[in-house]
Image (cartoon, rainbow, N blue to C red; front, top):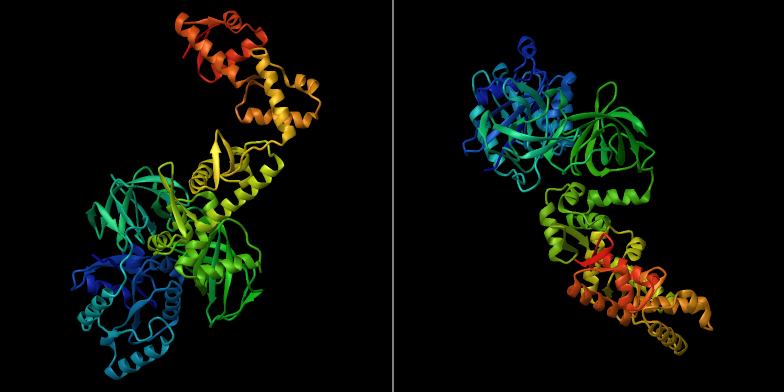
Length: 631
């Protein structure tokens, strides 16, 4: 079933709370001061069932200008607004400010409710109605229904309910497949239960015993119980007003404006890159680095506004800005916000978070301006493709990409990119990662370039070590192995014993080098279990040390010579013989000491000991006191 949240808006004393009570029989003014003064100070909550069977939650907001901060904490999650205008007064200053706020928060649908119709005659009501139609031209409420009602007599209420029901039919349902996220607008405690938080669940679903994270503090907590409209439930869905009993968190550790969300979904930031539109009617421009109040979700935070593409922002103009916050927030791209002056408190603009940034941005930086243009105007595929390309070197998982992307159509867009082979889905450590095809091609081309240069510089080496290649590319080891496997399967490279080479590369000796190789091999065959050292090669061969060392090392790489210690190298034939003799002796005798092994090979301690230690290292043997046994 679709879940709907309705919010009220309008000037103080225009009858919002009375209207809600007439519709729902619920009194939303719960504070003693509200009852004494007869005005709403904080958010109030109610619900009622529509004729279609849909249950609508209602958020009643205060109308007084002093309590705009409280009003802003409640309206960000609403689907439909009831803009309340009293028939005896018409549209007033707070009506217009609330209307501007709703526009900045991208509220799309609403009904204009003209209350207190019982206080005016028909002619006056008609004049007020006409005036309202004129005043809302150019706003999202242009052409919206205008319903006169009387909360006192009940006149017009049935028509209002029917109009609301019809309008909610066209409201797009929230995506319950997304990770859950709920801005917190109330925190309190109940004896015997502990800490309760409430808010509008703006995405996903949440169940009893689910674990979540309170941000920006990072507290992990479990859901002990859930209520929707005062009824215990096992599951709450996006679009519902929810009360959550959290385990293990004290009431004074959470505040209005915090967010309860799926673990790992959000990250804290003190930098938000946004689009900002100033209201036409304000009296002065917004200056660079001006101190302002940012209202986002249920939170108010003070910040400096850095203009990125203008020196000064005039009323009615739009710009890209970075807000440098005085305390961290946890939000997502696509979240809407409202901007107010630091003092006096006046709404001056609003817009959309385009990027949750990690650093300060400088004005007139073309790269960031172009990125923000793409985030604002680009198609879903263009934006997500760009994000995945940028993050591919980190081998991102789905949650990281959603965090950066932020739009509701994330899963559908990702699937389209995969289907069109723009993004490749792979698996590392039982986790799906997503890589851009251009990233894969770029890395492949870079590897080819590195290997060609390496083979040209070191023609007698089988290839470059895997770790050296990874460091040149600056990629994480597990992701790098994934890429190597792909490129090897494709036929671009070959990999053996941690050495990477181009697929068709072969070590090739010149005739002179071949003669040297044969001579060196002959020396090691003649040496047997008493092989020569590198210095002996230098002294006995009439060639440069560099040339001798190059061929000597290539023979070790190819496995023709086996290095058991830095200064001890055997021909592979004698290395294998030593291994066979050792295994045979141990199978017959069960153990061997150094002297016995030395005599077995008819060599000296200088060569026998490094061989035994080498066989220990490769787990062929195990030392027990002064003897070796087979593992």
